[in-house]
Image (cartoon, rainbow over all chains, first blue to last red; front, side, top):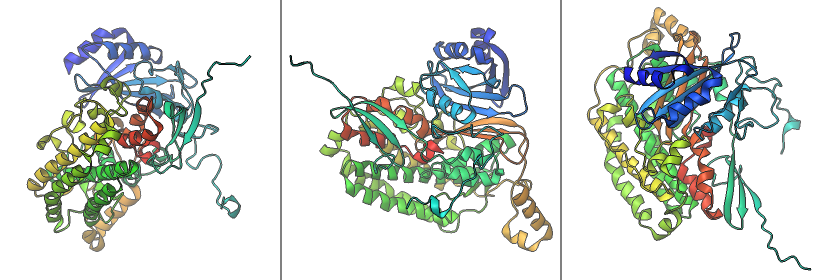
Length: 161
Length: 394
């Protein structure tokens, strides 16, 4: 555990803002502009070898500054350990895409764009994935109402049959 | 002068979302050259119901019934993953009996899920009889679920901190009966398919996914293991007492449709091994932790005692609070890594629950597997990745 932290510090010390340990999990805090460089090092380095992307999540901390947080859960198949990277993202900021490092990040980033409206620079195909293409608004934002902006109607006229 | 140059045109074919062989409402936009697939683009979202948003407005207890319905073929895994995440934030260690009970249910569910996969997979390739056999045995498992929870599917049986009720009388005996008969049934399916010439013609060497590609795309579960990567979360990071059990992780060599079939067949045998160990060594004791802040009082007490009734009312109406923090818990579902990223702001509702579903990640690699194959083999490759669209779209 401590060896691993030392190793991560050694390899990309100038990219890391903060390292925390929480219940055997290492959590790094990285600035959004450094994310691709840092991930490239973590992925390519032979000792660390974080070659598998588990998950990328977005969180909306409405009322806090910066508003959004992106959480990358990456995994090393070789060392069998997990690493969490937190990135604070201000509103209207384009985060560099990590899909050039892990191809699997492509859809996760599209989902975050779809749900939070966070844009990714350098993403090959940034468009909505779960919601319809013409949808207005970003549903998982905290200021988006649970029922949506337009209340659903079920009247006789709506029936297609 | 006549233009003798051969003009090469591709055709765009839309497959789904209403298609019987796309396992739900998957839409594939196929680019075809004659009968060969040049490119495939999955279009998803037809079953999107905003469960992650709904969970944010429900209390922790209520959210169990919602996560249940994401992957409707393996609901116990969704429950378990979510509950382990909540328990991790609450710092709860459940009794050993609870862990064993959870393992028994999950492994039964894994078999049931693989049986649906096997039946539909064979059905799509024209072997109709297999489905009749697999659904016969799946029914036995669903009856077991009905016996303990009252529901055949989406049972919401697990609770934070344990179970609401113990297994009913006679349940373990019926599980033992199932363990006795099931291995012979797997052999029965195998006699129908494993050495079947038509089956092998249709599956061997088809839809190959290399180990590097699989890891790069974030593929997990049997699809990853068929490509030769021996990675199973139950083995690599044991949760809920999997460290007590002996089992093997089957891996394939070529990463084709046939190898995925073999891996899943072997997984069912290993699940039986785990269940029989769990049933033999099932510890006695309480089925929930002793913490009145989280656990409901028994129904009998709540109907007689005043304090118990107030307590019952308080938990049902107000729920319980979870300390501030965030956690990521991954479990090995029949489809792969099912991860729950839970953020709590200290209240009685989840601030954010992100579900990393295995089908979503596995589906990304589908265009790679489909490239260059014949159009008639597309359904075989889709079936071999074993996606559930409820799991993809959530």
